[in-house]
Amino acid sequence: MNVEPDDIEQILIKTARQTEENNKILRRMQRAQRTAAFMRFVQWILILGSFAAVYYLIQPFIAEIQVLTESYRTMLDSGSDGVRYEALENFLDNFDLSEEAEQPQGETSPEELEPLEEGVDAETTE
Image (tube, rainbow, N blue to C red; front, side, top):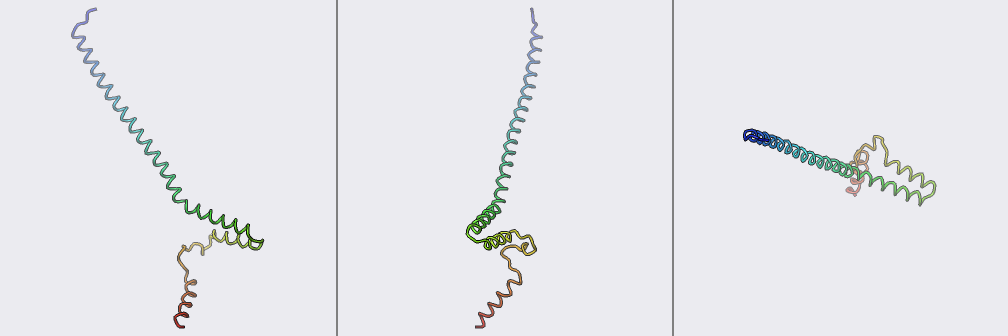
């Protein structure tokens, strides 16, 4: 089994090319894995962050409903039947969907301002 030096040299050159090609492929695969891992991390951050944001935005409404239900329970536990009916009406008034309910809190209607202005005029004239 005689192998000539030219054959050995060609085999070494071919092996070197294949090794370089394999290294390039392996580096691309490694880069793709790192990118995929980073994107999975970003995906989970976005998912968990959106849950936190939704909780932050909904929390005031949940707290308001808890306060309303607790006050309703205390009114029902402490009153007679007539008071219970009034408590139920007051509770349901908080969820009124009529045009009056669409007015933002903190703003007063012109009808509410008139008695106040008359009271101020009466006090200043005396």
